[in-house]
Amino acid sequence: MFGNSGEKEKDNSAQSNVWQQVLKESSSRTHLLEEKSIIVLGNRSSGKSSLVARLQNAEPAPEGASNSDGVALDYAYLDIYPTTHSDELLGRANVWSLEGDLGHAPLLDFGLNEGTLHKSIAVCVLDLSVPWKLEESLEKWLKVLSDHILVLKSKLGKGVFEGLQRKNILAFQQYRDPSTTKASADPTSHALVSSLSSSSVSVDLETEELPTLGDGILTHNLGVPIVVVCSKTDAIAMLEKEYSYKDDTFVYIQQYLRRVCLKYGAALLYASAKRNSNCDILKSYLLHQLYGFEFSASAQLVDKDTIFVPSGWDSLPKIEIEFSNQKVCSDADLPFSEVIKRPAILQQHKSIYEAEVVAEDDQDFLSNKLKLIEKAEQQQTPASSILTNSPLTTHAGSSPSEPTTPYTAVDKTPVRRPPVGLQTPKDAKTFPGGASSAALGGSTPGFSPLILPEGPGARGTGPSPRSVSAKTNEHKVLSDFFSGLLSKDVRKGSAGGTPVGTGTRPPPARTASSANTTPTATTNNNTTTAATPPTTNSEGN
Image 1: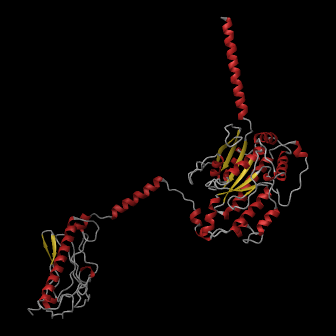
Image 2: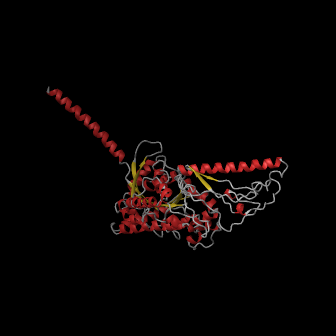
């Protein structure tokens, strides 16, 4: 019994040792590389979130649907593998993205502090779709970074910040074009050496004599590597089409950005997250700067949408060559804003684009709508009150000298009389709708204008059974009237008179009774019928 228990204890201890060994190997493999930080700065809608998504090998969110909108300081991470197709995780790099508001600048301390300054890299993202804002944006975020690092400088130990500056100078001076150097077969081994050596400032950096740099190089040494990224290069075609930007314009923009980058020892890269252009170069360069991975991309200045200038490659003589090749500006000291100006079309709509819209409170909005509805209900008079309670009125076109005409007992509709002084030709009598007898093909002797009833029901304020019936009778009266005229003219034409539609009949002598005759309206039950006008029988006279 005792022997069996001893064997079981040995087996359990052996299994526990195996698991401890597996956990130890897994732990050492996970922490193979030290955690380092990438600080991303830029204006709102400059493309920061989309670039971070591309660095994570993910698709960027659709425009206007970014998950980081409204987040003052966004956090993400990059998984680091020795090769592109490898599954072995070497470590993770922290990515801190500051929202584009200067009021959130103090939050940088979470990602960039005295404990992480020596193992961080800064990325300033600029929006190339609005090139007239490049100067303002670049200066603003470089100042934010500079002010923050100056605060950290006072918290660091003696000589630590100076050591970081010396390291920056050496890195710039020792740059070699990858096309002229042979890449190592194992990038991981070089990364381990770089990771261990960069975790603290070495004594050699403090004692070694620094090389002499050219004019305008690292005059603003912040002690951290910097990469300036111009995003949204897919907008170059839009700028050429809508704002008539030429190749010389982009050359001038490029040389200006290179001058600023040279002062900070920064790299310059053009990228488009939408087209996934140059994003792989950006990721490789960041890992090269942080962990020392081999980097094989050389400087590129030919294609204007994939510009890449690594730190240490550029110099003032090279920039001057580019400046001399463009004709946009001849004075290198001229301010950028005087050369790349805001288009006039945007200046006219500046207030529209930059106006801040404040939403109205829900309760106030509903209260205002309720008042409008109540006011509309009070102004709207029901049809029944119009038919029964309307006062006696006179048509708006009648003369004050004429007596007022009351509503009829059936439909309360006034009978319109012709205005006093209205003169119409004897051979062109006026018909309803503004037509004349001449326009209709002839004239009718002794006929005075027929004025149809017009009231609330006829004005379209609301259909009612009475108004519909009155309109039906009106159409019937008109139809019978014109049918009678046409049949009469046809009979006269067939009897040897003047053909229909030709000639003009002489007006007959009108008697006093016929001259004073006006149309009358008779009522029968619920309908109103307009009497036909009296006519003079030419054969009887």
